[in-house]
Image (cartoon, rainbow, N blue to C red; front, top):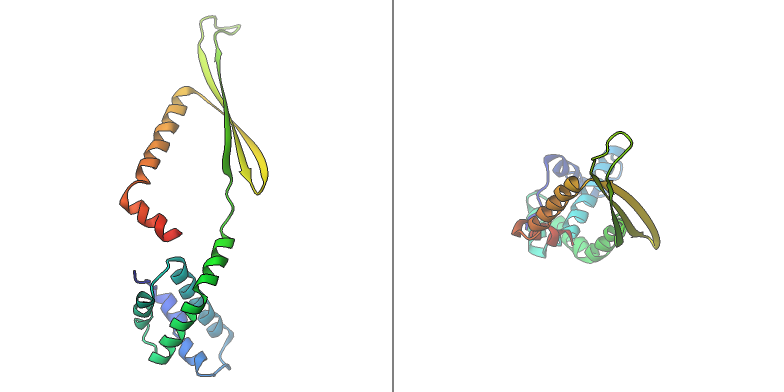
Length: 172
């Protein structure tokens, strides 16, 4: 899998040969763009677990010297596990499912209407987040609940497609 860089990112990485030659009397913007380009190259390559050959092919497009390409490759190989660990720590910790309580309430009549049937489903969703338990109370009518169930089943079905499996595999 090759890493595709935009023109802006290629321009940011374009200052690496000048900075690598020891000309540190460059402007602040030039150095900042170089660092941003290098950090993007290394983080995206580590995130996608690009192989050594694919990384070389990705940076050969940039037109750097062989010496600089070898230095970038060695930098990537030396630090990709560390970068991946840092990226893993930076991901937000999302709440996870703990339990679900539900109740079906049916209003049979009111003062103004004697023959009224109004069902309501109340859900209490217990979540875990960073050792804390929270509860969310949701209330809906049965038709909306059925629609929600259909949408969730459709989403689960889409997760079984080859395209989604590839995306999930690359995210890990």
